[in-house]
Image (cartoon, rainbow, N blue to C red; front, side):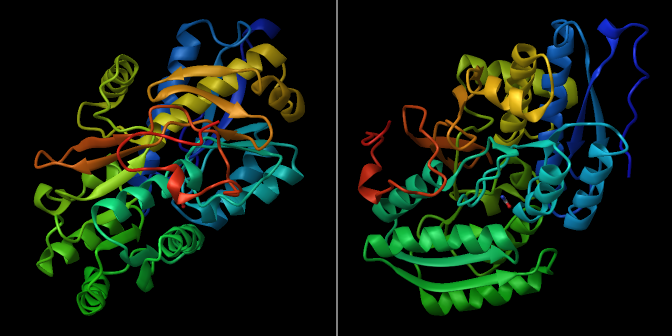
Length: 395
Ligand code: ACM
């Protein structure tokens, strides 16, 4: 479904807008976090247009709502790249939707900017990955959990590609530390709360130290409700996740969130001057109660980086734009972000936060530097990441 329609082109060549396509779900299981991504994207476009656009031309978005359905994502991408004449697409949250879109993007001479943490082990010449790869979140989280909670893990995920792969990577790190994966189970997207209660029975029998969750979107609140109803205490058995953001927290009572742990490059509570400015601008644009997530920050940052590259290249043709992107950098809310030309992934700053009694994230660990993306985990070792905040082996 078309979410909006751009104003017509200007009267002269100088006023003709640069058209970009946006694919974020307004409905469906991950619509909360995707709405935050759309918010970050629109804020960046507003800022770029207020500063005079790109080469004097405004940026104009054509947005669709693919409702978390990979087939709809593919159809919308096809439409953007053919009927709408767009070459640059910004969007996708679930990896299943990215994998549905990329073959169309590659075949139709487009370029996808993907603002979501994901499982890594992928390279498309037509994708720029601006969320965290496993060497920028999973390994640091594993190290933290192993040192603070123990080495007996239980893995639970939503039933699609990201959770399978992210759990495989986490299992690898746990086994490297002579730990044990006591259980691994998947729940269909949109499953009822009872499905999570059944999983908690298995958790009770397994007696792990940590639950690592790759559950996404609105289902996260059901997982937390089941943990709470089972009488587990987050101090002794936390749920640790890469996909539980401010958007998922907004869907659960505070007592079900308290004590649980997330790793991400950005949190709404980060508090640096750049982060404060971003959060204030986001809430002014979209409303004070709207959650500001790491995925929203990535969406905001990638639009700024892409438009910087467009300014340099003077064309939205993917090859010259990608060549220009290599020389770009953006002082993002999390730190200075740039794209690694060798693999099209972003340099990011890993952080870990724990949810407090106030229902907000409190940062408990910070890498202290931007980390080079290594999406295939070629050079990753748990010992590189002590949990006390010191860092080794950074490029
Ligand atoms: C994800 O599916 N990449 C969160």
